[in-house]
Image 1 (spheres, one colour):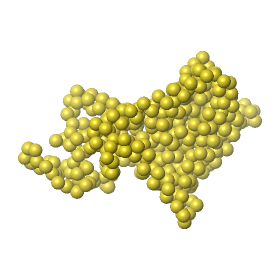
Image 2 (image 1 turned 180 degrees about the horizontal axis):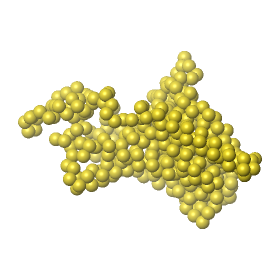
Image 3 (image 1 turned 135 degrees about the vertical axis):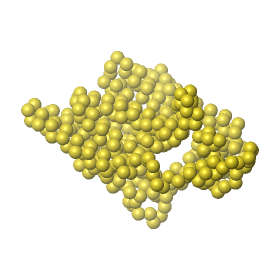
Image 4 (image 1 turned 60 degrees about the horizontal axis):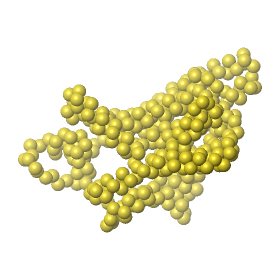
Amino acid sequence: PLYTMGGWLWFHGLRGLLRLAGDSSPNPIPLLSSYSTLWAFVALWLFYLILYRLSQGRWWLAWLISAFYAITYFFWYYATTTEQYSSAVAQTLAIVYFYLRWREGDAKANGAFYAMVLLCGMALAHMLTVALIVPPLVLVVLWQSPQLLRSVRTVVGAVVVALLPLASYLYVYARGAAHPEWWGRGDWHTASQWFWAFLSTAQGREELSWGLEAGRPFWGGGFPQMMWQELSIPLFVLGVIGILFLGRRMAVLLYGALFLYAAFCWAYRFGNWYQVILPAYPLILLGLAGWSRLLDRRLSAAANRYVQVAAALLLCVAIGWRAQASWPAADSRNRSDDTALPHAGMLIAQPLPAAAALFAPVQDALALQYLIDIWGIR
């Protein structure tokens, strides 16, 4: 619900500004997509900040790795379409960023701790799979500061802050109870029945069950090969190994999260696992910063300079390869198979009498509803 509420404010705010600027019927598609783009930029900014810290101030390395990740196919595609996955990436990276801030114990460490807790709680009101990073996060936090459990004030404060995002469900229930026509398809007689069905995410449970059915192959649905196809085999391997060199606690956090993502996505391999796993890709690429830390310890300054130049050149090659591989599939403009709206547009372009009712197949009816209610064409 939090993502939807934010998207509503973003869409209506931008549309209102465009109407004030003279565009009476702005195209809603780029407006809705721009909300995903907003979160994608936030994710890239956080990714850069994390890499900058982990690589000990090597801005060029942080910039090149961030640029490579920005043009990986799935991140690029979901950053420019009306999906919520770029926000899940941003939320995951924000958790890692505030963990680093808290771990380093700067002047605002207490605020970083509660920001981290709030972000973990937001997974309960956003994408539940973002919470896969929470168990290893709790482990490394208590590993570093076991005294937190002895502070009643800290424990109670953390629980309250983590549960705050759940208040958004009160709004969902109240609005749903007031508008039963929004419930969708289902056999519900009361608002409570609808609400519990809403919380249970039937689609996700159904897709998860496919991988657990008898007779299903152990691998399938593109799992796991799609992961190294996304990042390339060299960067995938270097990233996974490089996590070892980021320190014990950071390694436990990242390996723990990646293990839980891998286990969940294996069970989900015949569903949309490739969407669920999106936050794991930047976690793997963080391991590339680990190699810079290792080489600092093992090589002389002169030798390290040559290695850094070679690494920069190879990353530039990887960026070029990934850009040309991603662009044809990630470019959502003017696709020949985007035919949902033209036919509906022809229908409402006809000189119909006032208060006329149109009867159409489901796909045309949905397109008409989009053009009339969201685009506001007629």
